[in-house]
Length: 143
Image 1: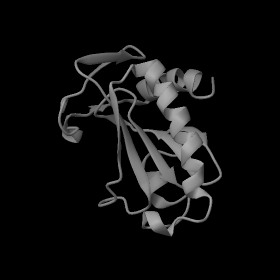
Image 2: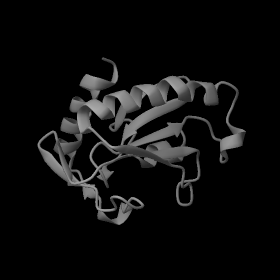
Image 3: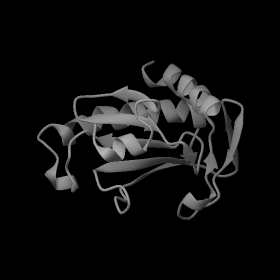
Image 4: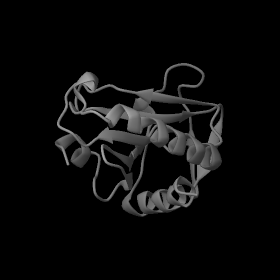
């Protein structure tokens, strides 16, 4: 796994893995159910991904969106490809909603709603909360 994936807590944060991608729980949760969708390659640009990586996004995003809709009941979903600090290809997947959502006993507000997400107002999960969020999300990811 590349350094960006390791920085986001792999393997402890791993939800699911595909040929070209991993889906990780984002430990700092700006909104309930925030994830990282990270390419396993060493590519530093979206266009440099190996053949098949782009096609694999379709079933992965369908799975993510279905699961997060069930768990968070989001109104919109944002895929942010920032790659300024962490250079390997990855998306921050942020369910967006008005008000608050409670997942795994933890309440999260979407501080940026209805505008841009406010990444600075994230809830930092401890190890037990991470395990609880992962367990909750796993119940829905492969359903």
